[in-house]
Amino acid sequence: MTTMATKKPSLVGGACIIASVCVGAGMLGLPSAGAGSWTLWSILAIVLTMAVMTVSGWLLLEAFKHYDLNVSFNTVTSDLLGEKVNAFNNLTVYFVGGILLYAYTTSFGLILQGSLGLESKTASIIFVFLASSVVWHSTRAVDRISVVLICIMLFSFIFGVFGLTVHVDFSKLTDAVNQNGEYAKYAMALLPIALTSFGYHHSVASMRSYYGEERKAKYAILGGTSIALFLYVIWLVSIFGHLSRDSFGPVIAQDGNVDVLLSALGTVVSSEKVSQAINVFSVSAILSSFIGVGLGVFDYIADLFHFDNRNKSGRTKTWAVTFMPPLVLSLLFPFGFILAIGYAGAAATVWTCIIPALLVLKSRQREGSEKGFLVKGGKIVPYFVLGFGVATAIFHFLTMVDVLPVFRG
Image 1 (tube, rainbow, N blue to C red):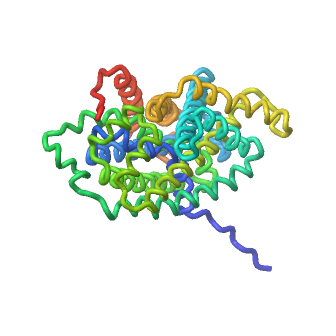
Image 2: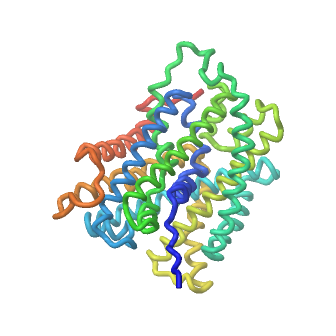
Image 3: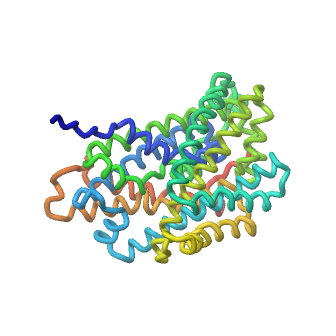
């Protein structure tokens, strides 16, 4: 009797998983956040962020190599850095999830207000109850809806964004009307938003388990972040090639809210079908990110409070703790999209840069650490990743208090 060999997971499949985790509503904030630095410096900023975030994922792989394939980020952090550090790390994970749900709720409410004529707060309430019901129902429901939304995002991105790209105005792309413009000094403000666009680190343990080794997981991570980088560059070129730098003033004045960006874009795009495709992509990206992030926070809350998610009562408790605080905050304090994403990026530096670097530095003190998967570069690499994370968080708060230059349009 012939036994069929088990088919090994492909690198393409793993790369697509990482890319799908990265690419979501966060990319909608990149143009507004990068309006000051404009095309060249914005691209340089996201290339640097992509490189650091890729390496920080590799650092996690190195720290995980001493553990079973089914180990979690939570377990490794607790073992290597202690319960207090792990508790703080988990708190930042929850904060990032909560602030993202808050940002998506506010933005989607404003989009529905413009398209359906509803009052934004009413629209936000309707959105949260409908979208969160998918998470409440089951993980399988999230899986099925996510596949549909990703397909819609893919086709609308191809038709809409590439429709913009082929008609790019190079004078706008290079900001030709502003020959003496300053750009580099505004790039620092983009880093926290760029960082959230490469936040796949909670999936590193899954990738390692998926391939059964660190080396293939390393290349899958590189492939995924490279795909995300390519899509982000195309997105920025498409937007900056149609909207002048000065036209971002009204968008920034509204804290980079997505509905304002889409309205501004709609006034300069000649093709109504392309404009509609961009709108469909934006709506799908926010909805997909909302239920994806919502599921992660939902499972985290259930584990934290020991709610029984096997029955309706337990799931309802988890649903209330997960989705009601962001909704209430959105109704009471409807801050802008970029402002919220910036806070998420500042907090995310903890578990995307700082903790991975500390884990590797601690892991390398153990006997036998020189064996198996290693990230090249010695101590310079983890210290650079650590420094990048700390600097990105500092840049965000200095921007908030106007110590660093802020582009107003």
